[in-house]
Image (cartoon, rainbow, N blue to C red; front, side, top):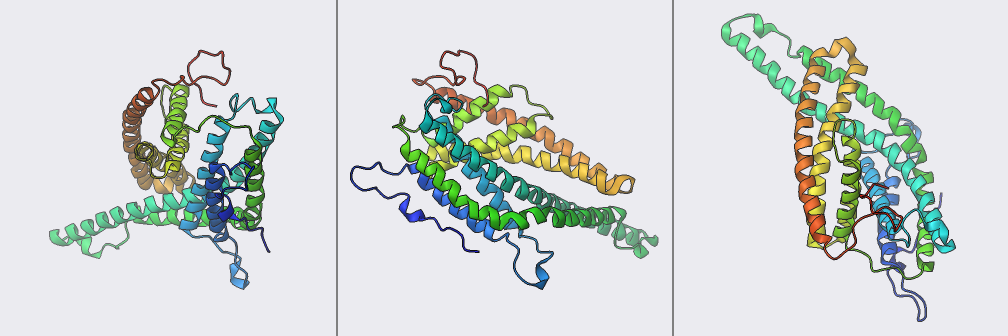
Length: 357
């Protein structure tokens, strides 16, 4: 199927005399869209008799999900810079057109992200199991060696321990689940890729029709403001909201990473990534424990206990990192806010603390 190929190289060019120069955010969106389209192409089911059970590679799935998040971060930045805030766009027809174009693109990106995310999570969990397998194999080897040294019957013990068997059984369950969860992504990849360019065009054309906006904030400031809103919304962190806090921090991180060679943006992005990774590790163990219960039940008690132990260790680490990095980033935000207005709700007259949108 022949798909529309956007003229990405034209996005950053200066338009003819008398016309407005293309919005720089449009150029960034074009680059990210081209990359996402390419990665979706790697997920398309190939033709041939052996393609029925095709599964996309680990890297392709990861890149697709990350690609959607990066585009969403740019769309967030655009929407927050719209006059009157993200919820007042309907007041003017031009702003309403842009808001509608962004909303349509978000709906497509959400479908793609969720399809890729279900597969990506399983890939991460299988990696965690692989590490546990190494540990279980080491324990089994030590057990056999100890039996041989003591002269007991340990030398005749089978190489595979109960824990190793449980790991293998859970991995087989996860592998089968990946096969099932891959199908929506594989089946939809070609169609979704063909729709990306129309969404890009709608947003960039709407951007060009916008009245002049205030100078865009730096990527670092945009990321810090997004994180400040998030922190105000979730002042008390706990197991029930920690994952949502991570998702908000990830979005702020992608905003920071649009800063390219900006050292401040790079530093903010690294801090947010550390926070994101620590909480993500905990959440992966949390979900893996649930999967172990579902897949193995009472037959996987030893493995489940190990996974739950890792879950608790990573929860403690994640909470400590979240509080430490939040203190650091909020300190940077307060320092950068000198001479600028405080974050507020979209209504100009509001004087309440910032909230997430």
